[in-house]
Length: 223
View 1: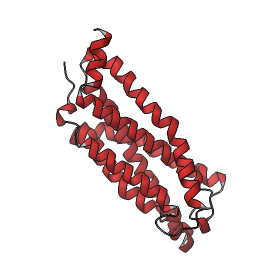
View 2: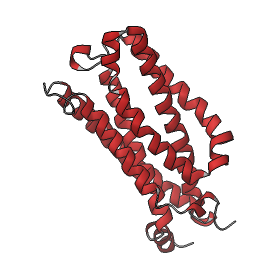
View 3: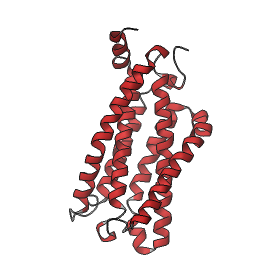
View 4: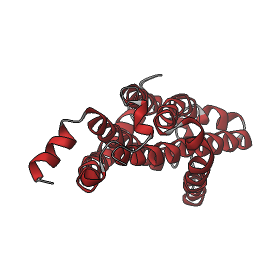
């Protein structure tokens, strides 16, 4: 296969281009979310944070990682085979939206009851990272399915290059966005909620882009 035809297959084939865009966009959301969580957890409750110690923050990130690992297995075995790759990506992106928005209210709950605050933040975090696990499992498989076997090596390389852009800009955007809103002294929604709302909006956009991925991508082509 020539290099010219490879570039043409990747850049001019709408399904693969859409899946690559979705993967890059979702990767950016994921990285920004991690950065925001790292800054949000130790910030004081009076500023919209959780006032977590380093050990408590470690517990929070352990839950995040555990949910991701668990639902990579659960998603691959039960969710994705039942509803398909395309709808798995769509639903994961959609479900992230309300979870992200309501999680920002954890400090309000924490100031009322520490136990309920912990329960709420662990539940929402577990649910969020469950959606991430299903989302990334499905989108990586969709990248393969939207290209014939001879083009998959190049297509995956192109996809990972686009995803790397999100990994580079995500920490900067997340850190700057959350730090600026945390110290702004403004009321809702321009306080700490703003970062969560932006992430929710980005996930909604990812879901909308995902609606353009054809359902035929559930099955690999050229096999």
